Length: 313
Ligand code: SF4
Image (cartoon, rainbow, N blue to C red; front, side, top):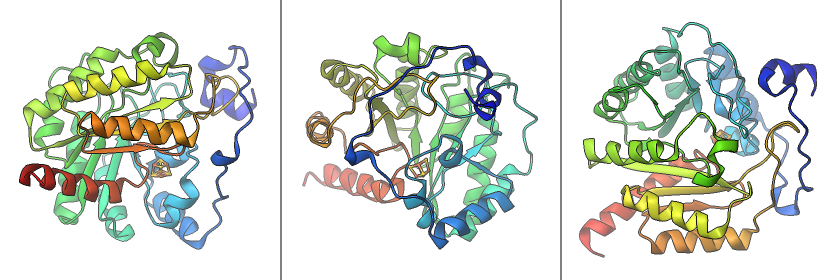
């Protein structure tokens, strides 16, 4: 493990290496070299913002940033958990940046975003898990660019009673919380979280505000069975989740969880068909699908699908 990686993930420094199979041709992505990419990067850094695009080493960054679609990660760049799949830096986070809501709103205005996705690191150290910072960001965005629709991708707020309520009451258009994987793999892949707690969070979000769109996603290729993925779909539908995302897990470093296998594009397509047949309004399922990938266009599809459902067409 290189020095930089050890600094980013000290808890993984003594873990064994997990070699993964070679990437298949359908996983290849273009290097981020466009002018649009460089302009987005400059603007994000000028406003002292962090993005999950960079911190998670997302393979889509070249494409998304060329189109100015960046997903801002609030509450700093350091996560209090240490999931086996995630490239975000772990450790003791610094103080919350009080200018973050203003900077985020300014960046959204300058990027001209029609739809903005806001996510965060886990902040188990804060009494509210960071919920009030989400609320401030939503309010500031509404004041600055009222036409921008807002999607929040939140942590699970485990043991933080009331946090979910204040976020939903701030009225984001989409509440997104990822299950990440099937329940059997939680102890190794997402050990700090509880599958049924995350599921209940999604269910409660819809109960608090039935008009909100809810969204959740998983990574595949971690060793899950197809039947387990279908069970997750049923669980999400029983929590009235509208939108499911499914993408291939990619290993950030050799000491993160290894890739069990690469799911083929045909299998992703099948998951999409099955998901839609189970009643999701939208299913995004492809090797490079990520929670916020094409979130803008997908939000338009989501709204359209609900309108069609309501009109019975
Ligand atoms: S898919 Fe999401 S995280 Fe990845 S680059 Fe695009 S906006 Fe960022």
